Structure formats: C-alpha cells, structure tokens
Length: 205
Image 1: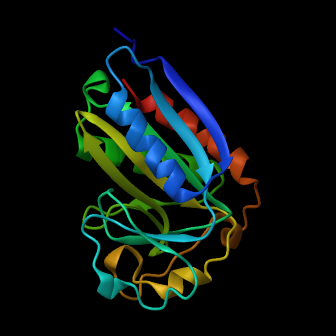
Image 2: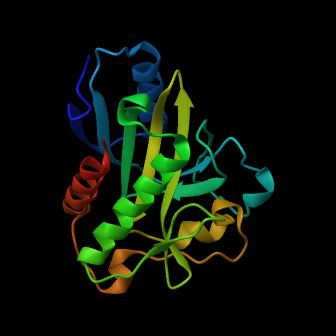
C-alpha cells in the first residue's frame, strides 16, 4: 500500500490542453493502489473549457480561441499563458477526502499562498473558487472516476485577461476577474507553483 505522503510532482511546462486532459484520463484509468498520487504543474496555450454543467449560452464571443468540452465539474473558464494550472491526480480515500473537502483544500491552498504575497483572498460557498475584492482570481474544477480525481485548480498570475470578456466566467454574467500582476505582485508562474504545492502537500492527510 502506498503511503499518502508518497506524492510525485511533475512540472510539465506549457502543454496543449487536449493532450494533457487525455494523459490525466489515461493515468486515472490504469492506476491502482500501487501507484503514488501525482500533482502536475502546467500552463496552457489559450483555450476555453466547458465543464460538464457548461451551457453554450455562456460562450459570448470566443473568436479564434478554441473551445473544448471537457469532463470536469463546473461551467466555462479560460486558460492561457501566465496562468498557473495545478492538476491533482489523487486517490481520495487514501487522503480521507470527499470531493467537497478537496475543493475546499484547493481553495485554501490558493488563499494561503496569496496571503504570503499580502493579498487577502476568500472563498464563496455558492460559487467555488477564490476571490479578491469580489473579483475571481482562482478556479477549481474536478472529475472523480473509480475513487480517484483529476483536473484541479487554476490561479491567474500574469496573463492577458481580455479573453475572459468572451465568456460568462464560471456561468456568471458580469463576474470580473483579476490576477497577481494587477495586485502589485510580480512573480514567475513556475515560482508561484512552489507555495501552492507546499500548501496542498501540507493539507493532505
């Protein structure tokens, strides 16, 4: 039996969304109790992703940016360079977690990280994710199969936020977004991953 503390961290750099999604599905399909959990750090080229509950009406003006119908929970969001994406490929029972608890864990990891940079962030029970001054800065979306989860969180660091104007972010009209760079914090995205990963590892049983 693998110890919960056995966790493989993979820094994938910038990767195509579809390729990464397929790799997460493949890993989850074939993994067993003998496989350590993994956390993947990645950035994606510009892409809109529509979750299982996503409605086409929330795609307002996507232009030339591709739209991918994916299998995570939630509505529509945008990924692009300068946004930190952390995928959590975990066996939930191993960490004594249910999905709601894992969502809260990921939200708190972002909140704790932002606090280190002097940013006061918070979660909202009615709208999963992390917010600063009523603007969304971080999102969470998960999928569970065979007791194992994949997908994870995204945190806006230093990116072009204009594509968010082409959607109702997370299914909410007029929901503004923000990022660390607009809050006076200038940090490379791969550096931002370090406190996020630390916070996740510390919170896992």
